[in-house]
Image 1: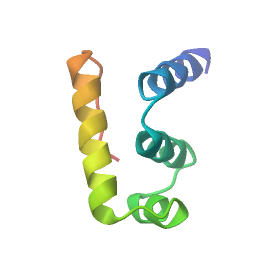
Image 2: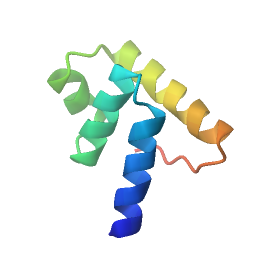
Image 3: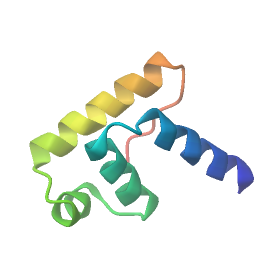
Length: 69
């Protein structure tokens, strides 16, 4: 559990200046699916997809694993 908490904190720091990414992270942490995240945070499907792609690239650049939900 501690390792998971530390990883989530590191991811939050990585995207600290990216409000849409933080919304996606928060939604995923709550177990929401893409449609639920879009509704909760008033994101378009395109904005959600673009944000997930940007997040994926940032994680891959840092050698971190990515798992599509």
